Length: 198
Image (cartoon, rainbow, N blue to C red):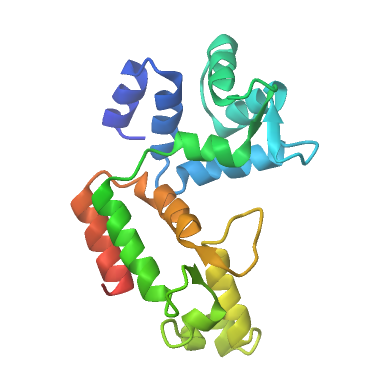
């Protein structure tokens, strides 16, 4: 962690913002990494965490926070007061919002993939836009074109419902996680334009 990041963490009083900064200090997959840690801690496979699981997840992820502060953080995430935190709601709350300019470039990429224009990207939309021929598992004969396309779509599909159909909301949600680790709008937009040839 850089000295600047350490200083920001120490000075930050808001526990949600401190947790966000801690995750972002770990790079582009920091928030996702915390999500993976929490999935492992979900002992009863309920796709949610109770307070005990939440505290253990924070500790295992290396978030230094006293029990009282972590409990207060838990209560902020537990919006309906039922004593649990839903994974997706937790991760969405933790990620910073994308600027309008970032959202627009992400939607441009989505529209490029959505060849039929029906608002959903499927394997059929990918044909002619994405080539599976350079994928190592396709080259060695392990996967078919369909499997490569499906694996590509699974990157953007909702983790709970991998149905092979990606909506603009799911696509935006994926890039919200990427966006969280990039400070500059200009850099994010340049990256998107280059990656998607916009």
